[in-house]
Image (cartoon, rainbow, N blue to C red; front, side, top):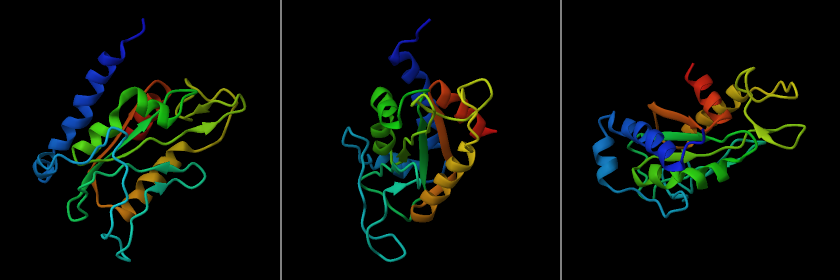
Length: 182
């Protein structure tokens, strides 16, 4: 059975966004309205960094990902971080277009990223999450380390609330999200 997109979003969105209310600063972040321009709210706010200049919005080394930042980002207020993981053969950008999660997260004061998995020998992106799916060619890539490093790198430049770092995924990305929770 194929689940309608609205059903999947209806399940994932309240769970993810409801966690924004689980901190002392959530009320002020939600009340501010956040950014969000319908494309994920990507912006590079000035100030706040150690050098006082522009903060980076690209992270991830060999697999770069653009961080979506609310327009009213305040480094004095730790923000939730939501990372969307795509399904087998898709991309982070395509998964975000499908779910529209980036704009929702940034509108509520959160940081958002949708990275890409590794490209396999069949030229399809995947997450090396479990033996069940979808490492068909025996890759030894450590996606857990990549994603932990991504969270750490974002946290070095932005004020991330460590109690509100969330992974959400579709299909193979769901397997990887589950692995990150473990």
